[in-house]
Amino acid sequence: MVRLYDSQKRILVTGGAGFIGSHLIDRLLAQGHEIICADNLFTGTKRNIEHLLGHPRFEFLRHDVTFPLYVEVDEIYNLACPASPVHYQHDPVQTTKTSVLGAINMLGLAKRLKCKIFQASTSEVYGDPLVHPQPESYWGSVNPIGPRACYDEGKRCAETLFFDYHRMHRTEIKVVRLFNTYGPRMHHADGRVVSNFVVQALKGEPITIYGDGSQTRSFCYVDDVVDGCIRLMETGPEVTGPVNLGNPQEFTIRQLAQSVMAIVGRSADIVFKDLPQDDPRQRQPDAALAERLLHWQPSVSLQQGLEHTVDYFRIRLAELGIPAG
Ligand code: NAD
Ligand code: UDP
Ligand code: UDP
Image (cartoon, rainbow, N blue to C red; front, side):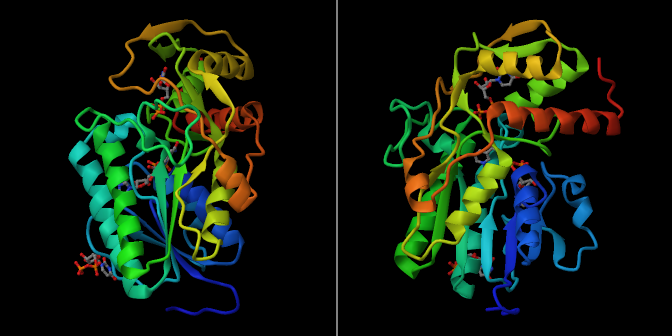
């Protein structure tokens, strides 16, 4: 174990150059901790962490979690994994390897160091859910051979590994199931619905709705998600999860399109495209456990969160030289 002073810890964040990971690192650094960020920059970018390069308590390691990693830390947050359907279906075998081999390596590290390890799991473990809203006790409805399976089954297997290391080796685990998260530093071309709609609206392009737009999602702002993750990590060893983290407010994709257009201040055309295979029809977290265990509730409304996201993308598109319409 590495001991720094007082409550300062050395923390490994895998996937730390990604959207959620980079916000988590900002928060942990602000709490005074020392951070090692391990990321292979598959979907993350140095842009997300460039403000930290040179920070005395921050270190970046270009590393692929499918390979072993030997470092000395007090805590591990395992977030490494592409999260958008476009990205995770780009190389599905690598996606499964990242979830499964990445979990084995990070659990092996946690076992050797006898340290706490956090896993960013997902509402995708519920698949196209037959129970609504989804409590943690629901086992899910996942197509194991479809195009989303590399991600869904990879994350399910990672959960299995976490609980087996916990049972076999007493490894202290913290498993969170994140629902759709959005905010600044999403990749502008990751194909996710919030980034797509905001970028399309800013560029004055038609908004692409897949299917008829009646499918639902529950969108949680990234600051709320990070707050919940840290709260879970700080619980005692008896708390393993899985715990849902997500905003119980549910919206149709059509409603999301209307909200984005209203905030950007223009009414774009809407084009309807085919619904991707196995696209879940509905998704809403039962967030009662997070509220009870972590005293956590989302505090940022969709309106406020979208405003911050639109502000971010205005600047980001200008940086990239992409003209707004
Ligand atoms: P992201 O793609 O922005 O970040 C993932 C990071 O992992 C990237 O920086 C990427 O380069 C890195 N990575 C991918 N494969 C790797 C590998 N083999 N080795 C090392 N690094 C690797 O995605 P995100 O939205 O920030 O998601 C972070 C985590 O949260 C993921 O595990 C994701 O499954 C989970 N999650 C996200 C959401 C969401 O809505 N954003 C929802 C549920 C779960
Ligand atoms: N591992 C790692 N860093 C460590 C310890 C282990 O990356 O500090 C990897 C190691 O490569 C191994 C995996 O974690 O493949 C699982 O480790 P564990 O000790 O559970 O299993 P074993 O080594 O017996 O396969
Ligand atoms: N979606 C859409 N238009 C887009 C991108 C996505 O209508 O340009 C839909 C997609 O079919 C899904 C929902 O929005 O029903 C959320 O998609 P996303 O890829 O963001 O996340 P996930 O499906 O993993 O929840």
